[in-house]
Length: 113
Image (cartoon, rainbow, N blue to C red; front, top):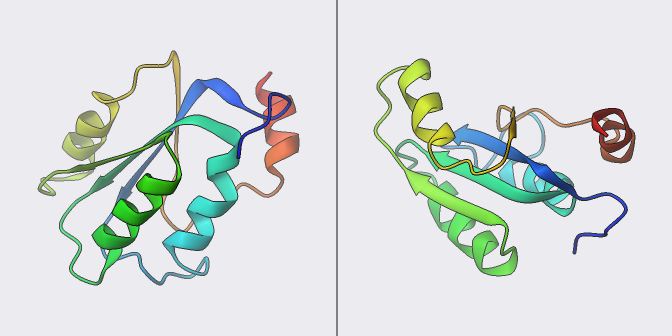
């Protein structure tokens, strides 16, 4: 799924989600499917979804070994960002909202390098 040419091995993509099965970007599946091939490490923190988001994440984690899914109670953006970042093992982190999409992942990869 990842290619040597486009993989961002030193950057972890992090997302904090809640009830994102459908969102303005086409839903969490569409967003993650677009980004997962470019990152060796992806951390998604679910803060209490009840719409099937958690089940989708579990399914996607079984297909993408780089996807790690965690749960936390939402106690404000700062605390949950810190919780997500505690699971990051790379030097850099890119935090996106669940409805944000990198326009051109290959251009982004080149810019980061």
